[in-house]
Image (cartoon, rainbow, N blue to C red):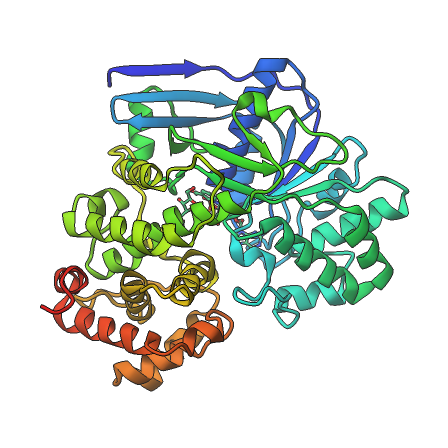
Length: 492
Ligand code: NAI
Ligand code: CS2
């Protein structure tokens, strides 16, 4: 290791101005880092964090508590250059999920008390796409999902992120307090609008006036977030130990970081722009660019790579044929669908993404990216593919990606090695494979007919089912290299 920069944390203050829902790896390496930099730059302790998990990972919550809420972020530019940052801006942590005994909401009341504290002016979220309980394609609240149904029946003891937001906002309204701003930091298109939809639809199930008040009074700015933060592996912890860091709560990320935020914070916000956050009037072009170019490429690598037994993004990006596929996908299928502000060079952006994927210090497992495909594919591939087809273009790379995803959801790679399909629709996928697995044509047709995922206008477009079926046949019969060659030389 030739260059290690070590940055100690600022002093703790005990003051909380932001509550965060979804204390995962990304929050620790993105938002918390921006707030740590803010505190170090300004000395202002008013924007400390209270970060909570609502679903999984009580161990992390308890671990951070035991460590006085301090932990490390190792930001790798490459294996030679790392910035080792200590974070002290988290002032409190909570767990409101289900414990081993099946009981929900250990710290729920304390969390709601924080959310209704006058000093708290922003609530941020990284609860994954499925944590909003919206239909991936249509965006309607999934009222019959058991967790949402429980929140409809018992709104004062919520289990979900939308449920907590509704209850906290209801309590603030009853107390005559102004509502906090809700800032989603998940990889969803229009993430602020979708969060607003989830919250107001759920609120309307209990009190139409409350729903109207939320609609009128609460700001839900959209944001685009970007930093590759893979789930930690044993090898990552070993590497940190070599740097003298024995920290079970540490995370490893790339050095790159981007945050574009719609500037709509009625109760105020840190002056994040001084720390590199882009505060803009409209996030949509940036969000769409990132989702289609970066995340769309990630998902292509994930399904094609996992089927071929490739483990990480780094391994996949060392294959020339996969790099060619990504370039072609980004420049010919994604970029033409984007409408960017003047001065954005999408070719440069594509090359920057390929360089980031080639970071030799990240072990970003393809199986992690492959998770929750039903929630990810509409914004990563499908909306773009529809736009490209409607403009008279072609989408062979996306068709191959869809074929790989369908094959991936069978739960075995090309060599027959099993893995867990981690997706809210996993049971549906298994049933479709069971029923139609013998016929590529019928299987593809059945997948495309899932309206929760596929916009019917895309699924029913002439040629789409045929292209995916052909790619599926080539991929399953001839393997990855051959399928990629077909893309390069369709007539061969
Ligand atoms: P993680 O696996 O470390 O943490 C996931 C978090 O989501 C945990 O706090 C978990 O409790 C929570 N969660 C999962 N399902 C939930 C549900 N149904 N309801 C409430 N909470 C739920 O994952 P990580 O890396 O923190 O990523 C989380 C999200 O952050 C991603 O889904 C994505 O939207 C966003 N993100 C992640 C990036 C990354 O590179 N890791 C980069 C950009 C965005
Ligand atoms: C990845 C993203 O897990 C995934 O699906 O595509 O989390 C990706 O690492 C981030 O969006 C990068 O900002």
